[in-house]
Length: 108
Image 1 (cartoon, rainbow, N blue to C red):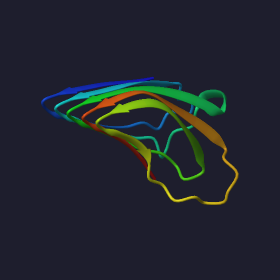
Image 2 (tube, rainbow, N blue to C red):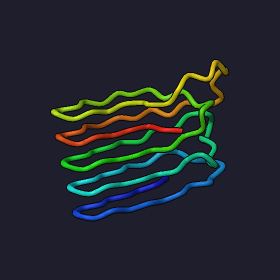
Image 3 (cartoon, rainbow, N blue to C red):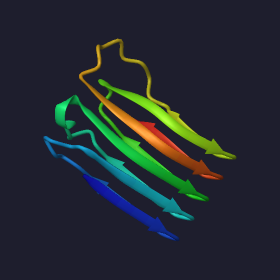
Image 4 (cartoon, rainbow, N blue to C red):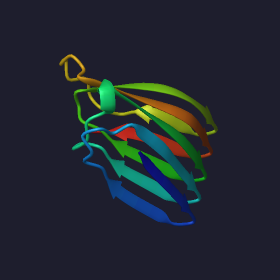
């Protein structure tokens, strides 16, 4: 699991775990960047809880992962900006949480 909190600052992490279960990311007037491109979800599924307030969270995932967003943006955004690949997904990442005047972006 990954736990990141950035308050008035920034934090960057890369995870290459072969049994990634998920974690939580919090950015308050700061930013978190998490790179999961070398990770593999345990059992093919992982869940991340996010909270961005006046800050931003960026999550990089492999293009062949499916991303399910179950979050609430309040004067902010939670979005998956990756391009569709047409390849069947080999894993699923569930992103839950909130963005309050901040943003959460999933990228490849």
